[in-house]
Amino acid sequence: MMKTLFTALIVMMSFQLQAVIETYEFETPEQEQLYTEIINELRCPKCQNQTIAESNAGLSEDLRYIVYQKVSQNQTKREILAYMQERYGDFVLYDPPVKPSNYFLWFAPIIVFLIILAAVLTKVGRRRVKGEQSESGEE
Amino acid sequence: MNKKLVLAIAPIITFIILVFFFWFALDKDPTKLNSNLIDKPVPEFKLPALENPEIVYTSDSLPDELFLLNVWGSWCGPCHIEHPYLMKFAQQYEVPIVGVNYKDKTLDGLEFIESKGNPYSMIIADQEGQFGIDLGVYGAPETFIVDAVGNIRFRYVGVIDDRVWETKIQPAVEAIQGKPLTQLVQEQTP
Image 1 (cartoon, rainbow over the protein chains, first blue to last red):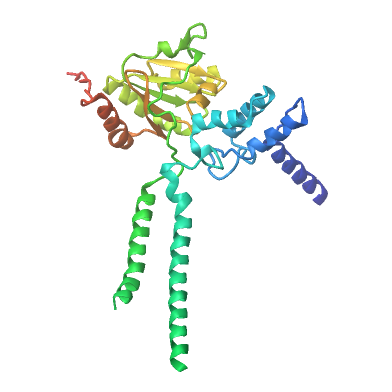
Image 2: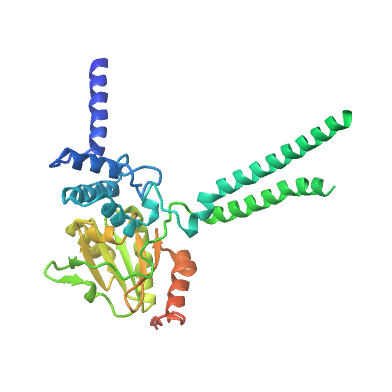
């Protein structure tokens, strides 16, 4: 009884895995590598926090197929990412471009770091000056 | 003294700035993405009519006036909820609604229209889903407002009900047209 249940469970799990990974035949290993690389850099528009490689949404499946077709036609990574960006916007890229609308996100941490650094340095500098003064005062 | 004042005010200002950001984030639904096609023409397509595969539609077949482009499928649960509203808007307003039957089986799409009614002035059958991808569709139903020149001006992802029509669609249409939407007078039964 347990054995049957266990087997059934294993079978069910393996089906679920198969749902995500379709296998595509590529002419060269480079193409296959490029395909894997691209689907791991594209974000599924439907499911927000998954790449299209991880997601089993219907849309991700369609997008993977498009990537497969384009890789097979020897399109470059840049061309394929541009194709996706044209349709789904920067959202689809896990490495979004730096542009005025998101300067704040890119540069705010650096600016805050610089402010803190400046504050700490002036404070330390002042303390040092004070220290030197008191030392000279003791002499 | 002055320095103490700055130190005391700094956290309050930081707090106010954060509240400001979070307040605006509250209103934003992260699952609603901006369309990348705003102010761009409807992508090229060459697809059959749902009712008759011998009729082939292209961008030239689209209405010459402002219209709504509604992406739906019989497989899409929310589309069933949206459908009665579309029926109502199609009767009430002069704005044509073009349907895109997205990734559907022809028979299922036809069955949907035949049993529930047809609010669409034309239905483009996009079985492969390529047109949907060119439109950047990620969750049906999606509705685009296309202006008289043929440019996409607005996109709404999700069900259009009375509230969405009044708060989003109608104001957007009126802003694009530059005049209020005329409501067709419904005939009163004596």
